[in-house]
Image (cartoon, rainbow, N blue to C red; front, side):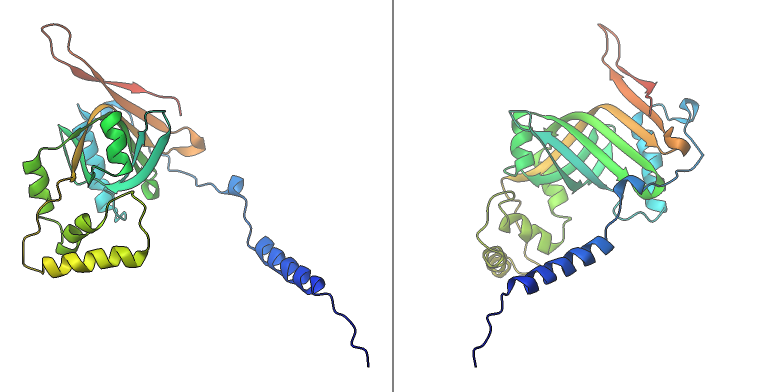
Length: 245
């Protein structure tokens, strides 16, 4: 008996159609996704005299709200050609001198900041309908300050700073794990790990700090502190301006 030839294409097409149908059932429309923010707003009279005290107030509220990693911020830099790049890092300290984070100076952000120190920070506190945007200049922290912070890191994180040549291409996960394991043998728990020479902090000195409060009907409050440099013989000061939403 002659066995008829069966073309596999219909079954492949059927499988593709089934996958497309399943995918279609899971689709959603981003244009229809929206949250209605609260009515309470933010007035100029409610602000602190400087952005550092205002940030402290909002940061404490973000922490108190139970927000996951309220010190997480998006750091945006640009290369010599003006092409931007962004990534999320953890702010590790802040005061009237600026906002501090740590990284490998050989990473992409480290290299870009070496050539172009202008940087933007964004604290995306979406669950409480707030954002803080910082525009400023990044400067390296001193080695003593870097070493003091490095000693507070968990032992594994200290080893990780040595194991990873941040932003460089690595052959495999196994290669990275092997590097870490070798360091773990060299520096067992309880033994002091030295600070990597190409690892350290950046302090972002603000020139402008915007506090964004979500409001109803997308009429958000945006109040921005802008640093006005001192005139001859005078002192610089912060001025507040309101931005349209």
